[in-house]
Image (cartoon, rainbow, N blue to C red; front, top):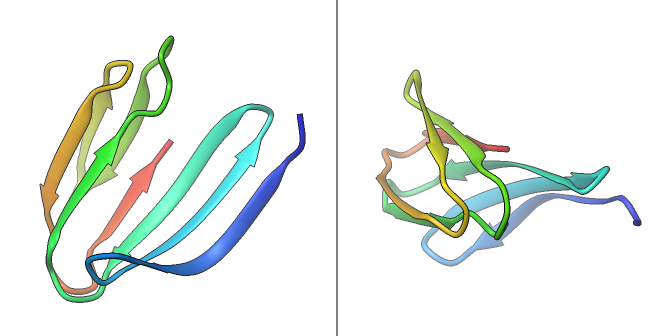
Length: 79
């Protein structure tokens, strides 16, 4: 596969997203600008993915969706 990445893409809901795809693994950092709810779905059908925020770590099941209430400047790490 081909590796890819981007930085500080502005996403709906006032979020900045930086992400990379390397060796079939997605890693992303989402920063909340306005403190809105972040909704994220594990895109994999066959594996879990970790989501870390506010000192917590959650493991999402395949295709599971998480909703996180954010605060301005809060960072969420995915992957």
